[in-house]
Image (cartoon, rainbow, N blue to C red; front, top):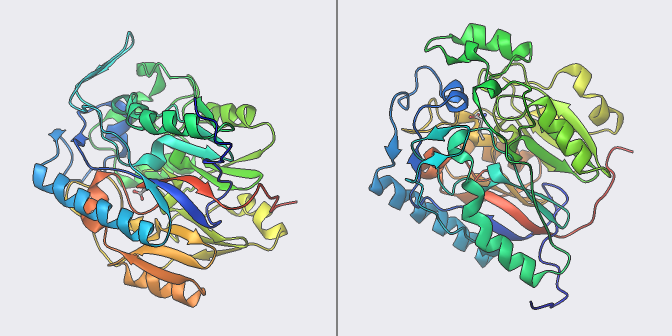
Length: 370
Ligand code: NVA
């Protein structure tokens, strides 16, 4: 084992200067077959309902072209970029507890990998089709382990994902948005409290504080697991009642720099959960409207990928090229905007924040909410 003494992995928040990042690949991405947690997330009027199988090759090629261009754009700015190694996602997932016909893909890395300081933690995940997704990143984890003597490679306990993990109420074809909003406001989500579940993209890092969305993909036991796993952190559960399909926090709540967060105006953070921000003079401002009325074809995400931005440093942010209102707002907030063409890759699991995972940002663990 080489011991260069070099720190490869270090990232404590969402905004310190980015030096090293993973960018996903669209290779071999699949639309997974029906399964409880996934079905609850796919909007009832979506073109994705009832379809599954390998994504059309031309869409994979186009998404890869955009992801490769994004990687080059970052490299030109001096940021080291690593890419996952795709496994065969057509292989069914089979465990003693469940089986599902295919997997998902090696997009988006942000869902799977949570970097906290010198640690990269593989999330439990909560979709059966994503059970083995961490394997796409194992070659990188091995590399970091060899290069960085302080790197901590961790994996959260694999969940069993039996039917006991999902509320059957969510499994009916037509629930309707009104009932969904009522349920999510009551914090009645598709996942039960059978065992700890979380996706890494439900977590935002604010130095000593981790803010975690309680929703479809992360349950309270998952948040409690994170609390016990990171004993030196304060872990805060948040929820956003205006979201009928609450998965992943990064099209809902977007910190841009110390003291400033964008919040999706349709998914407002409840007043009682604002206290820690208000007490420390953080501003939570409504994000700009998306530029589009609908997501692109075969896309799981909402139009609010507009606010799924990648902060390069507290003054510089990558915004998707067509999201003109979001770019204008960033400009007004004093951020330099780097335009990135990514919309044709949205269907593969999200925007600029989703399709990346932090490896190294300059800086140390600070307490922003003393
Ligand atoms: N809940 C999100 C996921 C995007 C990262 C959405 O708006 O679709």
